[in-house]
Length: 264
Image (spheres, rainbow, N blue to C red):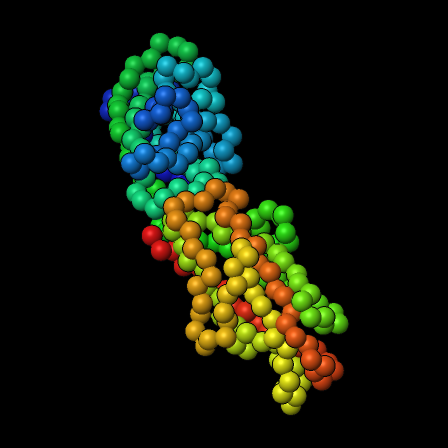
């Protein structure tokens, strides 16, 4: 929520009541929007930071809660400060760009529902800039996107060749993206005792496609283009245990680092 403060002054010095109205901008109703090319972001204008009431234009203002109202005394020598609040609706995914809308702010002498006189008019341009952004979530198969869940641990217990486990990687983006993976142990599980040199191999698949993590560089495992929906693109990650070959007893593990990058 962003606050905007405007100053109201009077010329004659007489005491008066006043109120301020806000047009719909480029929208046809009070579902206000900023636009960039054919894309749009929803926003709203409120009277308080807690978003109590939507502020409206003179033709739709029926009560005092539809406008910003105030009064100026004849003894007031300083401008009257009035504040309204701009709020973007959350969880909107749109391509990067500079989104804008222009709405009219009008001040009227009088009170809502009575005979009024328009005293002033200003046009306000509201701009919202969005950049390329990619988010990833690692969740149980079939679960929804959770921006707080970015780690996944798989416990195979006693290792059995060809045993496999899967989970979902959800990628939410407003632009094209690339996902890379890099294995700390170059695609094998090392014994947790660093003095034991035996390893256990495994395979990693992304959307049923085998990925080679045996290199010392990050490996691109999947890509996407354009904007996703709020749930994100779903990619299935599968880990399959390779030949066990009776390694030394104990725990074996590998750590895979996943990175996402915007490509548009």
